[in-house]
Length: 188
Image (cartoon, rainbow, N blue to C red; front, side):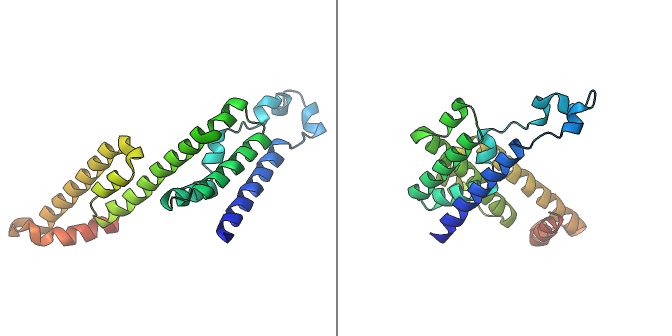
């Protein structure tokens, strides 16, 4: 529960910082200068979107935790905070609606599942673990499966080529595969 409160507090602080940046007053001197960039205020004000909220590290980690633990209450709490921040940042109603309601919650969980797949894929990739179970656990990342398989195939080809180099004319490549893996990892 303490982690949830800390996460919520962090999200609120991030929203206050974002709002503070949005409401920075222009200085009179710079506005009076001819052809100063502040003459065009729309260039100075950074446009925020719902993506900025969803890409916040604390939010992403929290939603990933909610998805992994099947914690719907945490996911809903994060969604509520995201909506509060979106409203406080004066995001357009169309963007607020993207993260609202059951569809918004499913969208956030979908993104978190994909992020978890990517994170776990990286771990599996570097430790030479099979990813078939990951594919079953995170079908939301289906469009990433082919690329993941290609990366593994390329990795394995590189390791095999390195093992062949290490074996040289001795010929027994299989004896050098572990050493090739170790050297490949060291290069990463």
